[in-house]
Image (tube, rainbow, N blue to C red):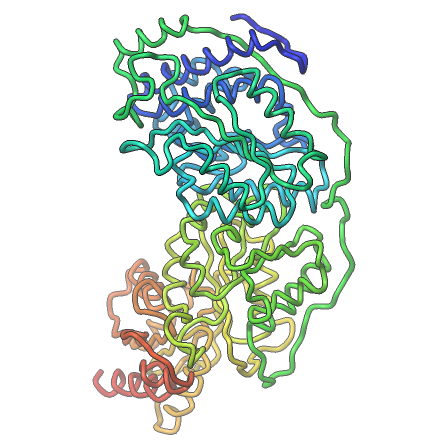
Length: 631
């Protein structure tokens, strides 16, 4: 093995050898694995060789160093190139590259994930790496206040994704001159030519219209690449703008049999072709080349203070009517005063979600994402990757458009807290476009997620606090209307728990609700008591994980007679969570009535709509009477 210890001015002749090595290793690893994207890697090899050898300031022995630059492969399918880079800097061995890539149980997965310590966020779902990078850049400029840069490699195909343009827009709005986007314009996508092909002028006009400084280069001219990257690092010339480098490249560059030829996307070369390609590229190389490092200790650390003040936990009088969305805003302000890592984002509805309270109290830790929910979740992901505790809020219905970002956040292993307000029919006259009726199912399906649905202000405060240190994707569902406070100040609400509000030794039926339907269950229990029917009432505030022990005990005590009421579509919500838990516990004697929103709603008052859907107190009581009398 030839090892080269590199100063910051590694010669471009050496860089050319590195670029050839990256291409060869991308071919070798994908052919060995029997799958992968060698041609997409080969087009960007020159770009990465110059970047890694001469511009990326990174201590490869200490990937957590807070002055390290950040390299994000938004075109995550070019993982053979990224892993070849990791080999070239000496953190991945040639044996691992050749024998572990895309293999079961190994860390060199088909698309990059933070299973590797040099990867900030999972990519591969196109249009996500750049938006995530905006979040990292926000942290660098406004919170960490460190001089590190964020370098994002994008493919040209993913520039058809709207999320890319949300990212450009917010990068410009927040003047993220610490962000450089390198676009590998190789003309060919999966099935043929991309939307704009090699029309760099069109790409440039669009990026400039979104406020970026644009540099257009030949992506295989090492001198031009080096000059562009040097210019990108000059933030004074950028006037606060992010930099976009549009690099015209050739897919499959370096192997004449496939250069600029469609039909080779996502296909490894057969062994004989790989042999010819490697020979054409000059054979295998084993250079170890590391670029410059940034000295530690520069700048200030926004996370350094142990506390940022103090504010008492909000408390409310029993019986007082308080909207849970308002309690969320109160709780977030108190939490932000105790923990300087807490940050908030919103999608231009903070006067409805009550995130405006945090924005007013801590403007330096609040990021307005406007009507760009995808970018909101992505920015939260990037902030979480930097060690912050983001809370991102909007209407529950509008989180649906950002679902892929939520899903990818789980793959990234980040801790992100989502808050969806104005959930369900309860919002009333605005109609179905504003009603979150799928949100519980959506978030329940995310791996490792937590779903919380408080019924009053006290539980909302407790659960907001619990979310701050909860791992994974957490979701808090809040209600528009004001409802009575049910619990005293300081009542504990552990994640995975529940509350039994009515209980006796001779309960006939169980009523299970969460949020707005819990209040309906309590009213139904009063109604049933007048008829001599005793109902146990459970507040299932933790929908995932759900309190299986309490559910099982209630089912056993009542002969399996259960009414579940939810302001949500029947698929995947509270009812499904209850049934899944009971079935998993082997309880077979069940008589369950599941009340949910089964038709398409329209406008009306909240009370009218809850009655129309059959989830108000009268319908809950009627369902319970039927179970008791028919049993």
